[in-house]
Length: 464
Ligand code: HEC
Ligand SMILES: [Cu+2]
Image (tube, rainbow, N blue to C red):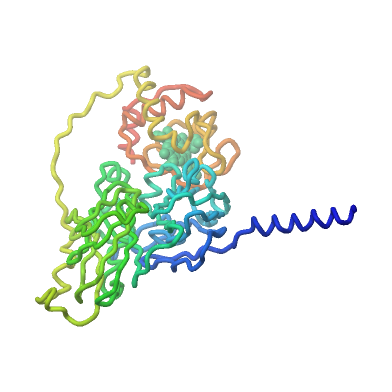
């Protein structure tokens, strides 16, 4: 009797285990313009995704380098392909040589921060979280670590496709294209290693607008290839951080568009489709005639003056009944770096006159500019952002504090016996703003008090 019972129990357990166990597979990641292979399985799976964040120097344009912050070592990060209903186990690793903590917000995730709340990862660490892909569609992922705009502007975005249950209709060629902008200190085309320019980012005036992370990522020997008669599908994303893309392929009409990357193949015969920052679209077209077709953002100065130009070449015999005429791939080359600046008058507002006013202005600047990293009560984030509350480093030297806020700070520092080796960017604040924010910080959260005037800051700026 007892034996029989044990037997029944164990077979029930075995049955349960089989019933729950899903196929486990590692996601195949693909680097732009390549797309991960179609999923050739019938049901759902448990998918393991391993992604690494890495900061590295790379080519932005001929002769122009940039220190990119990346997912997977490339801009955009690799494309991920899963299926509606899949369970995903996500591992984010931050390379030990990184200067910054990073995390990931996948728009395909239903949950706080799209995963960002569970994935803040300091250099040399790995984080894990899991989610179920509830909705099919083409989704952007990006880093969401403070300052979010800067992590995105430096290259931290990519696409994750959640296929509908039955998969997508078959096509001949699939491509992965992601648009984004870069805000460099130097003008478009200025040679050398270019730093990030916060003022241009705030003004939404990029020097570069590109596809797949650099000027020329899909031209010359990297031109996309297809054959006459091919059905082509492009998974197109926009990392931003600021601009909306007017995506267009010159000489083609999109036979079908999944507007905004949603599940519906809901539009037919579209010339130009709008792709919001942090959004996507899937476009499909048949290549009817041979030749080069130019991939552009039809906000057209971006194409011919800022870099957003790619090519897809169809090989095959001419089809004069559809199109007859000479073709050339030279007329579409970029025209050069000339950009126009429109002069504008500015009327400066009178700065704060006394300590009382500095405290008020300073709190506003702290909350909008500093709190993202140093946290609302100046408590900082362990291993990433040092505290300003009761900071021995801050309170020891007023002039040094002005220098830090004016010029940024990098390299190892010790604050309240904890070591930090990260980067605080120069924030482009005015003398009034620096005086106000430091006066506010010095008079908050148990710091030593005092007052810093705009004149003191100005004197120090002159000295550098
Ligand atoms: C992008 C994140 C970021 C922002 C925004 C930022 N800081 Fe920092 N800050 C840092 C990091 C990182 C360090 C440490 C740098 C290092 O390791 O060399 C730091 C260091 C400092 C220090 C010296 C160390 C300490 O704790 O006393 C001061 C003072 C400081 N920041 C003040 C400010 C003020 C004031 C603002 C706003 C005007 C600000 N920071 C905005 C990231 C930031
Ligand atoms: Cu990041």
